[in-house]
Picture 1 (cartoon, rainbow, N blue to C red):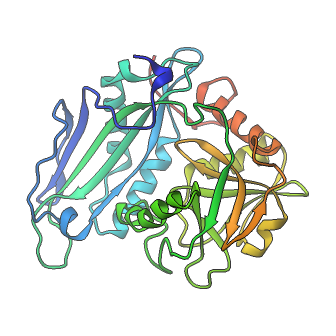
Picture 2 (cartoon, rainbow, N blue to C red):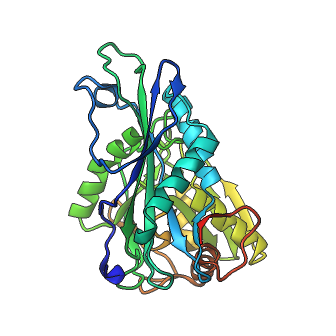
Length: 337
């Protein structure tokens, strides 16, 4: 396989994990070669969008181990997401075992160290039994598949241009803080129209007042102030990103920087030195310009490359993931050697 030519797209691998919930309990679960899902036309996921998911990666480290990065946090967030949509929670131990089984079974698809490619892992759970009245399904299916993906910055780092969206990503007291498929469906139209208008992504403001920065359709924001403080927006309708949480820790404990998680009024954005989008796919994407209904805000870090702090954070976190930088205890979960 030409690892360098991989994009971020689905490429089927040989095995995936499946477990079913029936009569109040999850079965043992196991691996299968069947990549198809067969459910009722009236399944809860199809009628009422009862589904949540996670996203994480497996890496080959410099010393040849296959590892995952903080999957216990994905497991606990998966539990929180399921509770909110009244889906039976998948125990953390079962989640981690499913990840390990799936990655080990597809070890040949984990890209070698140094290629920039990784194995993307998608755990998800959905209502599988028929339900016509508005209520939770009675049966569920938990699945994990994986697919090799290429480096996000295949052609080099290019700072993004965002627009301030008129749409709301989530409602106050809604589901913005869980990883539900329906949240991403809500962002699709805004994303497609942004691309059609020449923007890379949207900046969604808080749904109540439209005055405070929240997130994009699939990533958290991280700002660096001109006096060197790392700031991330705080809101009950923001998805708690594991990557963002890790970058903040790295900023504080590896770089000795002051960090703040607080409300970020949009009026402050023009005074920031750097801005990035945090997520599993790219770790951190630099933002160069934000357009607010025709008014252009250029970040001092520019449109050519990452800002200096953003670059340090990216290098340190990817180094931790790949085994070239010492990791905090418990961050690296070994699958096999």
